[in-house]
Image (cartoon, rainbow, N blue to C red; front, side):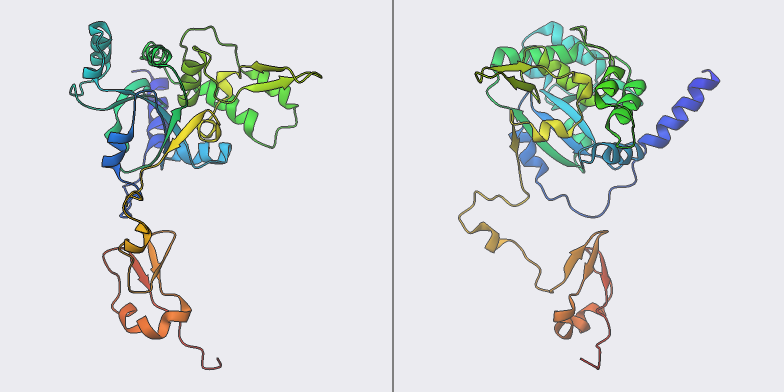
Length: 304
């Protein structure tokens, strides 16, 4: 391995390192996600790595990564496709799989369970035909093995950051035009390309003339970021809360609300509100509990 590759890999490892999973339970039911998800769904993921923090700052969105759900190996009737998938993963036939672009690995196949402890959103293309859906997945599969395009990420940052003094139309010239075949890119551009290949809209530009005749222009796939699938009117948001709202109403009245009076603050901290301190001061003095750190209520002000 050359010195350049060694340095590059160390930088990639530093950028993609994720701290240990916090003790906080995710507010959704991952088991329900596995049954809600369908092939062709776009998964938006809230990452915790250093590169995720950079992307979050650039895009002004909590969604830092996107992946395309393709289903299980047994779901594909074509043996050639099954063999292609097995070439890039050792997952079992019934494992639910996604295609994603990773900084340190390029375009790969991963199990959905890899993101079990992450905040995930399902974005489902509305009204896409089964035939076109298969074409979208096949397009994404042809991109397997492509490297992650770091130059693309840098250009996207230059385009989106507000401190540029160049006109935005000049910034868009940073990006090449699509060739119609899968090329190296980043996670969101790969998925946008796949849907564009069947003319399915994500965030198209719509223009009308004086007679109100509309004309739709496809957007350059290399300009897409993960949050575009969230705000797109052509994708339905599928949610799967930890406590099922389909239960007899009002379901929220039956949630296991804590009776201690504590409120949750960022950072896994439980805090006793001042107005309730007289009732729970004795409980607070017991120290931390299993759900997080307990902050003792402030001393009572004698002047009140």
